[in-house]
View 1: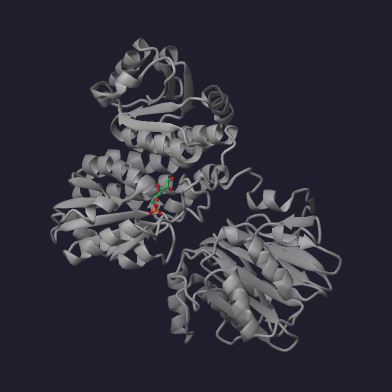
View 2 (view 1 turned 60 degrees about the horizontal axis):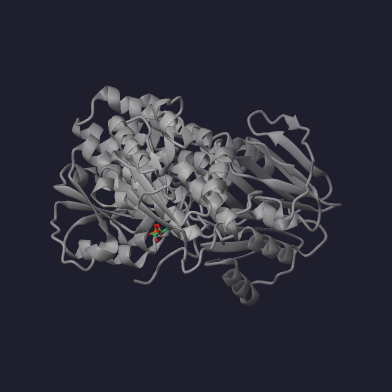
Length: 615
Ligand code: F6R
């Protein structure tokens, strides 16, 4: 995710763009930049860091004059965050300047063609490739900027919201959208462009939201002309009247970032496998894995190191890797691993999982594993983060910025990546049947819609939250693939509601925790269809016999557990192996609603930080 802003009109563009970038910083904050047209030249200033860093840099670097400009706040997808990879990007001639939110998937082949034609590139970004493709088309076809953009976008595969202008025609901005959002604010003889309406809400409450595969030429004199990218046909756009306040828009209308992020899961899981999972063709292709696959195939074992929620994702991965790829797996708290003189060999592969990519213990565990000769693979969300740089290779989760301190979408996207790696290895090793492999690829593609379905139970979950909001303790139980989900459910509840909660493998309950159960104790049991279903039913009976209150996560249509449990939260049917991706959803919602009902600061719980960069 990135944020884009643009302005064309009679006011000074820079303050509007700068303020807009500050409002869009929730969309990405690893680098920022602006391009302004001062009447003669395009002036660009950009930097790694936050919008505040850009602000100090602009002051000493460029004149802030100009009534046309574009700006960008970045969440890196191609190329680490640094000054050069920051947007805006110039074309080779310096005539065009562009900002982009999205991913151009076929950028490598386009780049090669442009290299063959003599183009040069200063950054590692797909965006610089796109602006030069537009420049090349403009020259080759001798067309105006808008037409060149339309032709170019018909050649690219991927997602984009772009804004660009031409220094030879500095009275218009061209914008286009596919997959990433783009709003155009309609003022009197002035126009605004942004990823959402927050940057222009005080100037106008009329906005056009471009649809996918639409582009617009925005000119001071001619207004906004919207066209279809495919066939160039004119579109009569709907002008929305905005009735939102700033805070609502940044949170996408949700009360908290955590709830927004929970609800983003169907789309971010798709982003995680987009271009990597081609179910119809039986292909899983992960950039970072391809060159190192032999290391995984020859590994004596895989050691997973992580902390907190990421450690729980690692536990799910342990089941998947062992089940499908038949590689022994150990999952370690990074904080323990780094200090206990672990036995690590050159044939061990270490996978480090981290949303932030900055967790100090995980980073130290990676360094230790590297010193002892292991190959280290990262699964991170933040592009260019310390862990992504410290590992030998890796896969990004592409979940977009996670702002709520309690991790939600990071967990499901980490599991999605680890599932793809396990399936790829199992297929390569022949430890999974062709049929099972193909079924799981197709089932993985269905997960976003199953998650969307699971989210629909929110009103029911809210009622359950209301019943149990005053409980002093909770127990979470699960078996097999859903044991880590029980741990994660308990962690979510304690960190945002401050209610004591413990997660346990359901069968372990009778070795101690069963002593806690009485009529005051809510027990959340994950009881979806699985090889252990009957065993879980027996565990539920044991809790009932001690008068515990049972809240069960069940597969839709379940009748047995429904009859036993006090409350149920239904999720769609999935293979057991993929079930953590959906069973975790009601548990996230349950903890969220309990915390809200208790009046807690859900997005910034006490004593916690989003990235734990100290031991
Ligand atoms: C829980 C949570 C933490 C993190 C842990 C690791 O909701 O957010 O437990 O999972 O601090 O952080 P990363 O994944 O950034 O290494």
